[in-house]
Length: 390
Image 1 (tube, one colour):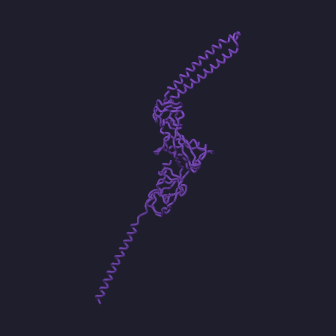
Image 2 (tube, rainbow, N blue to C red):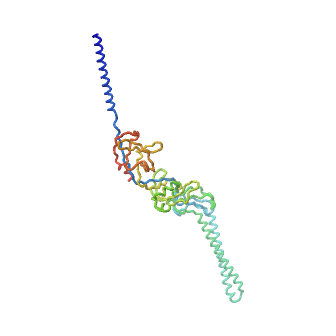
């Protein structure tokens, strides 16, 4: 009996020690679990601002010289010489082509001979009138003979005038065998070769001369763009609004900006029935000849927006084709908010709805956040973020 009591006492002691060890182990694990909970992340937070900002509307454009002049022959003949190369720059009055002048020299010589003959006939008729005048006065010959002589004189005089006109026409035709540049500009393609027969009625021009000291950029707008275009511009009529429009830019095919600004000059009277667009023309000075006819670009029209909420694009994320930001409330919790985007300007979205000025958003690190997460806000100097808009 005594041995049984000793055995039970030892079992109870062992059970008690084991229980205390297990309880101590659980307490330690719980303490370690509490200590292992991570602190809220420290993230930069920005108070959004509203500012006046300039936005741009871009429209594809086709560039043409101020004048694209077809160079055509005014007389028929064989092309004797080509004095320019395709793509070369020429000055006003510079010789471009020469047509074989021999037949026109011959025509001029014939006209000169006919003029000399007509002048001789006029001289003879004048002498005849001078000879008959005293005879008629003295009654030696009848008045009819003098009148006939005067008529012959007048006809000879008219023949001289006609011959002079033929000489002038022959000289003009001869001058047309030398074709010169009507303006300074660049030569286009030349489809003819030396020795080709060219005619004034031919369907193809010798070349096209592009006068490019000033170029025109043609572009079109849809009805929606056209309505938006007129908003905010001064003036009652469209012509007045175009005059008040600030200077515009031209984006070249390599995405660089043409260094000289231009102006919108012309708008077509109506929308195209098939395209639903209306055509515009803008002019750009081109003193260095950088722009050529046939090239393309994009016209950028500036528009000053009134005070608009601006949000850095890097502080946003997209979900189901909508743009969101994480706002921070007074409890340092983040809440996702959808934004209505009115446009963009460089690195910023222009927000029409969704945020108010001064509202705080998470500036960066949003890829690690979830709705309702608690953060440790770190204020970002808004002047540094928005300084590029000054």
